[in-house]
Length: 178
Image (cartoon, rainbow, N blue to C red; front, side, top):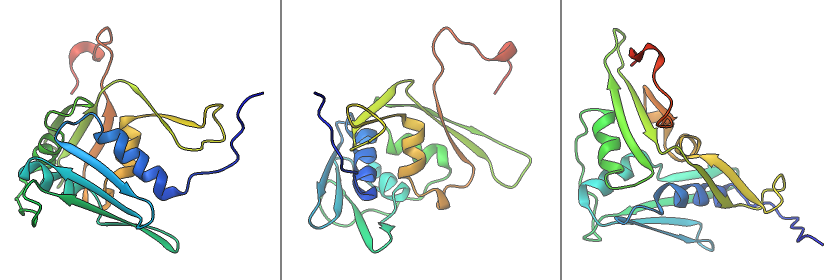
């Protein structure tokens, strides 16, 4: 008989699992979670990268009466340096430098007030255990673009679109866009 699990992960655990999936392959980032304290800590070995990641993540994620604190710790263990980011492309290129799940960010100037930045992630299905009752194994299967949309503080990211890289055999329509 199959192992039947009748629990559901609380939403802050889902957020932690998503954050781990996004940064677990990055050798510059160590993600730790303390369930008792509801605290997620990302220790980053590069000061500029730590600042970029901290800019992208919320300090607190609230779930009704529960809250998850998110802390980014720079290499010196002290305060984060407050870097100025000229655009979202620079911000994401820095936050995901040397992270194999990230492909690139493409900034497109528009005639509107905001530019558009496409943040492109690896073309790979991501799976993690999350007490998912819709899956025989309790896993969530998704894409990095979906995780990024859920994990990052979207209210502060005007004009950012997350997407997945194309397969090598697929081309752009007429080779003209973007």
